[in-house]
Length: 279
Image (cartoon, rainbow, N blue to C red; front, top):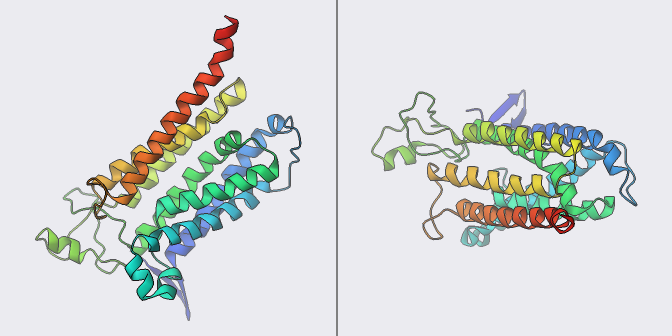
């Protein structure tokens, strides 16, 4: 792992570098999606396309997501926050996925209203870019060794993080193994899984351009697929269990799956209702 890149007197945290890369790449993806939907979007009353609006959207939503991820992380351990408020709030490490999701969603709701794009349609457009950004951001977790790894494994692709921000030594000791034992590189798993989800959602968007499709269907699938993926990843991750034997991330994943499934059922019912009535 490489927590920092040292260039002369300058030390650049690789996690921050990958977050910046994630925002940039996801902005390109979002802009590409906006461009291919331009004809449809221009039919929306009040919508006025802006130059490079995808980059503006990602910049605002990304910043809100980072703040939300940090706040959610520190609020998970209030005792640590009260003991060292400044240190906890402004640390370069420790970000919670669900907090970032909530912060980004709040920002996107506000942006959708300002851009005059229907909320569910706006979420559909942003979903593939969100997956790509998350995938690249996880590489930052891998490089810094910040504790997002999994339990020990004998698999050939297992990795060791003895000098990570959160070393693997204590985890290995819990299992009676040497300090340099190998663990599941779960950020890598997430990188590939989230890119696959992004490709699937992008394909759904392509199909939506060819014919009528229920608004919000892509976003609902995003909630379900990412929720299932994160729930399964947490099974082999070292995060502590707190709620009904689940980690906080698993509980949030269950909520994401339930909301996504309900939303998908609701919008599909409403979308097919007119055709049934006329039939």
